[in-house]
Length: 101
Figure 1: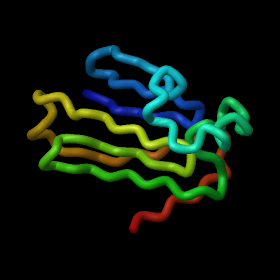
Figure 2: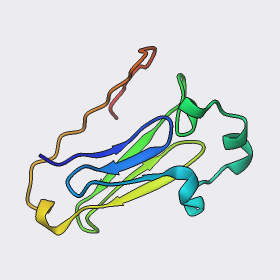
Figure 3: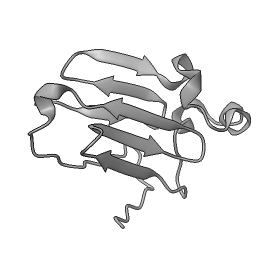
Figure 4: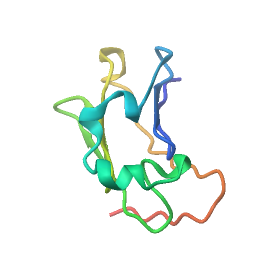
């Protein structure tokens, strides 16, 4: 099983490879540094009430997550190109509402 995850606190992981990074380590991902500075650590990427866009580009082999503070793109590993994908949204403390468009 492989997981590409981006947490509200800004940790991005590709569990298949064991690679992990934090949003603050990739400044090019931060689209609103002024807003990010005002956030609690667990709200870096998104917080309750905000919209979050997730785009799977099957041609470019990428998954992009965009919020009002960051835009983070995962490059899908070649060994995952032909796999079935499942979008999984998890929240530790609840308070989130998910709407698929």
